[in-house]
Length: 112
Length: 113
Image 1 (tube, chains in turn orange, purple):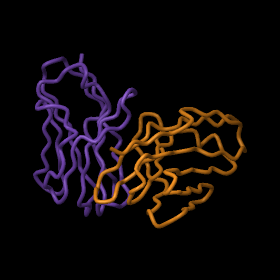
Image 2 (cartoon, rainbow over the protein chains, first blue to last red; image 1 turned 180 degrees about the horizontal axis):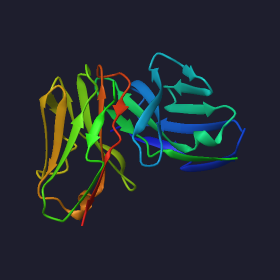
Image 3 (tube, rainbow over the protein chains, first blue to last red; image 1 turned 30 degrees about the vertical axis):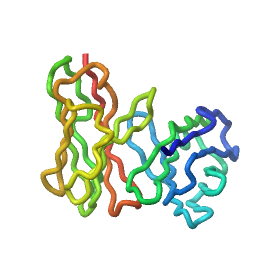
C-alpha cells in the first residue's frame, strides 16, 4: 500500500526566503505526482503535476522535482511571500490506478 | 466554468439523522471523486466514478455511507444514520481523464452532534 509522508509538518519563514518542502513515497511504481495548495476553509488547488517520466515541472516561482527511484519529490518556492501561506499537499497516483494517495501536508507560514 | 460546486458549505445535524451532500463536477469531466478530510487521518478517498459508474468504493467506511451519480453533472453522498465520528470536511473533485489534474470543490464541513 502506498504511503506518502511530508516533512516538515509545519514551517515558518520570513518573507523573501527560498524554501523547500519535502515529500516521500514508499512505492516507486507511480504514474504521476501532484502538488496541491490548500487555504484555510477552502478546497485544494492543483499547483503542479509531474508525470513519472519527468524530472521536474515549473510554474512561476514554484519548481517541483521528482526522483522516482528514491521515492522523493520536492517543491521549491522562490522568494516566498505572505500570500504563499497555506498548507501544501503532495499526492501520488500509482501506475494502473486512477486515484491519488495524499500526504498530510506541510503548513507554511510566511511572515512579512 | 464555475469549477466544482458543492452544497451545502456547512451542515450541522444530530446523531441519527440522514445527511445528503451534493456535488456538481466541472462540465466535461469524466471522473468524480469523493474525499473526506480530518486532522487525524488527512485526506481519504471514499469512492470514485468514471462516466457515472462507481469504480471503487472500498474507501466507504461502512454501509451507512452511499453515493450515487445519476448523470454526468450531479452526484450525492449520503450518510444514514449519521454519527459524531462522521464529522469531517467532505470534498468532491473531478478530472478529465483518470491521470490528469484534479479539481476540488470548496468542501462541506459536516458536524454531527
